Amino acid sequence: MNEDHPPAAPYDVAIVGFGPAGAVAAALLGQAGLRVFVCDRLAGVYEIPRAISLDHEILRVFQHIGIVEGIGPHMEPFTPSEYFGVDGQLIRRMTMVTPPYPQGHTPSVVFSQPPVERALRERVAQMPNVTVALGTELTALAEHAEEVTLSLRPADLALGGVGAERSGPGECTPRADRTERARWLIACDGGASTVRGLVGIELEDLDFDEPWLVVDVLVNERGLAKLPKTSVQYCEPERPCTLVIGPGRHRRWEISLKAGEDPREAATPERTWALLSRWLSPEDGTLWRQASYRFHALVAAEWRSQAAGRAGRVFVAGDAAHMQPPFLGQGMCQGVRDVANLTWKLAAVLKGEVQGAAAEALLDSYGRERKAHVRELTSRIKAIGAVICERDVAKARARDARLLDECGGVVKDTPRQDVLPRLEAGLLAARDTSGRGTLFPQPRLTDGTLMDERFGRGWRLVTDATLPSAPVPPVITDVAMKDAAAGEAEGVVAAWMQRHACHAALVRPDNYVFGTAADATQVYELIDQWRAALAP
Image (cartoon, rainbow, N blue to C red; front, side, top):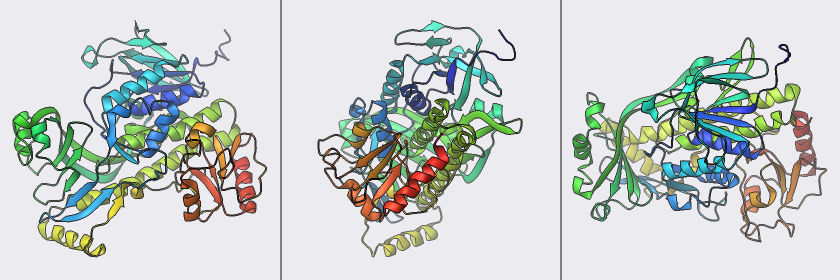
């Protein structure tokens, strides 16, 4: 072997962490035909629910992976969330957008996390180009010019057993300490990320730190009869709290803890039932989980490592990159958005579709886009939290009066999706139109299929067929929504284009809009800017 030119790394991408973000990353990269290695400290799925809500953007990703139909039994539409003020009056109502649904899926759902994670892992297990090592932890890593080396060992028995590797369905082999090599590494290993610490990425504090008790209960029929039929935000200064209606008999409470209360005592069954006594007694259900947390708002200062003065080969994603308060249920959604953004860019670079300086700029756009999006959404979530968590009675009454005054005394529905920001920086067209950086809809076509089922998830130029044909590069799919082959059934794209005053949109593989065009000249500008940014 020539020591100056060692053999190429056996894997294109290594992923540390096989939770939801890591599993989605593995599935997307595996579907792209790349060689993927995944490891996780646990030997199986964590069986306690953590995330409880998803939105239609994430379901569209699951559709692309091929699991959305299989997880249907584990999901239900999210009920409206009603906010009640100091004196028990309704002050706000959060809902979801009305049909026809813009992404082709229910806009907001509640779900049971363990079976959804199992479905993700089962999909990954069908991919022979993805190797999964469970019960395996990372102890060190080294970045080189062309690859990353991972030092691995079997995880502690307390975490679920000795290290085991699966390189195909049903295969499971104990392994000893070893190293693995990959061209790139994605850290999906949670809020206490080992990888983030090893590469020296710091977290920025977005100024939110509060103790809460999270309680999951499997409620029986007697208990269900006592509970509200919608999810509720109790915006009460004495003890702000939240009730979320989960799927089936699952109900979740998030209860704020007061200064001086012991979080460990709050999480004991006796104290938990005391805090739930407003709604239920122990005869009304079974505690599934009760745990005290400090809710934080944090974001990674950098989303890509720096190695010896150059851009590195390690990226952070999911909880390794950010943590936010739970008030809009966006934690897991944010992690899936991260890897949906990053994986198509890594695939384009690894396949040589984008090279040189353009490749580096494309990979750097991941952190630019996602960090700004996370910061803005966290700011909006904190504002929602401020409505819920006001502890001063006089200020809370003033809040209630202000919210009711703003709606003329009649509380109107506010779709949760309206809170989500667009992309503001990164791989976007130069012309800043209202549709640029937004999530493009997925219409149902006249034959009953959804747009992605027909046209895939690559680059797409979608028009309403009012503009003359443009010279579209062969790697961009031309979708004319009024053609017989692609007519939409419900007018979703037509309404979107009318709202954004355009007739065409160039859509990225992650379904975000690169840019919009109101006439043929602007379409040509979009194609030219796409070529300048990405074309080899």
